[in-house]
Length: 132
Picture 1 (cartoon, one colour):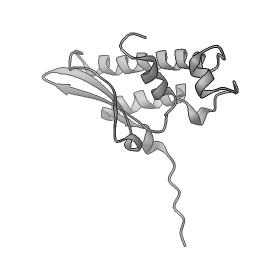
Picture 2 (picture 1 turned 135 degrees about the vertical axis):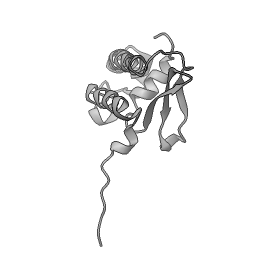
Picture 3 (picture 1 turned 30 degrees about the vertical axis):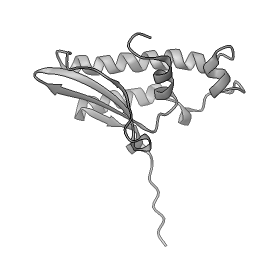
């Protein structure tokens, strides 16, 4: 996986409810930033210099990265021969959608990036208010 470590890919894949994706422009060029959310003090996972010529290319870069993460990590987590599966899925169970990044989440991330340059998966969680 060029440009991203296996550990970072697995961190993104297995923490779908604590991520933030951003595309930003500086000096006419676009950059990407992927961090954990507030649960990990916005720890930086992946960033680029502003070298991409357009917002669309920055978003395409994130989209392609997420497709790669979904494919490779999904395969690793369900293959009992891999170290990732032995550590994170030792019983070789089916992956729970709530516990991993899904194609539907990828779609929502890209849509939000197109609309507002940022997507915060931690803000998607349903908040329940109990009235006393």
